[in-house]
Image (cartoon, rainbow over all chains, first blue to last red; front, side, top):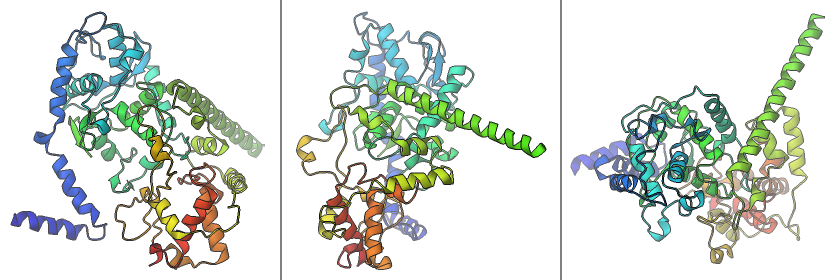
Length: 268
Length: 208
């Protein structure tokens, strides 16, 4: 107790020039970093059940899905996404790949897969099966280096488009992603913002998605993060697994190359 | 001769770069068109960029001086004033708008509830600016506005500048990060006058 009080005063002294809010925010973040307390693990377990469950008109599981390393090979697959897929002839991230596997293997239509994308935190809902499955598949790359391939022309083009789109200003707020995420030490209110051009910063971010979001009470994936930012920018809903989200995720993932996945993350 | 060739080379390079830029913009427009689906609750007009958004996107907010001048002049010409032409409104009304962050969220996943929409939009100023020193949860994307009026006084020019800056930040700084609050219809002219008063009035907590 005494130690805790002392360490807090040290923190406060060090943070003296910064706003008082920073010290308590740091403590809060330290608590979020406690892996054993991460409810995301429960969602991963659920995701595994859904992944292996026979579902859809074709009554099949997702175990035959190829995430880039071969049919059914999950270990390390997320660490090498997004990538170009020959069968779909486009670059896909984890979630857009899941959508195509659910359509091909299980026989769902795109509309069926996308009918309910996210658990609604306002209604205290649990994660959707789609969210849980993505969290499970991503977790199979925990501890591995972020290493998206950049050989295929499609991968190179997607990366280029992703960066250009990152700077694209639209909507009634005139915002682009870069408005908030291209400088060090910036905050919206007290929420610190990742600088995508700061290697350490972006590695720390990308290596911890999917993440358990305490304020939502569920795990969230990159697609939700892309949607959420666009929603805050007051655009229409950006489509799940759309070319723009995949391009953005491709750009962000390449910026974070070499970081080590530390999953599941836990954030505000 | 050598000079002329160099000039020609520079022109060729510049036009190639411009062409590459336009090419990329066209690709981005295609990308956007493929990534948002029209339907109930989706206002697709929000994705259509105006001249200013296009230029700032293509140049990553760093337009050439000549283009920047044209941009600020064009944006300045868009500024509208309250019907009674009073640019200093009621600072207490302004405070509510500065604090409020509600409004304009659309789509089918989490649109603003219609009942709440009746209260109108907020300016969401604290997302990016420190304003009243008592509010610690202030962002830092924009400069601190604490003591704004105390530092600058309430002269006619300052009132006009503050109103116009709030109405359309890009009338002064090309490709400013700040939303064009009035021009884009986030706040009405009368509301911008209230926020102007909140920043400038000696009675406002901003200047205490």
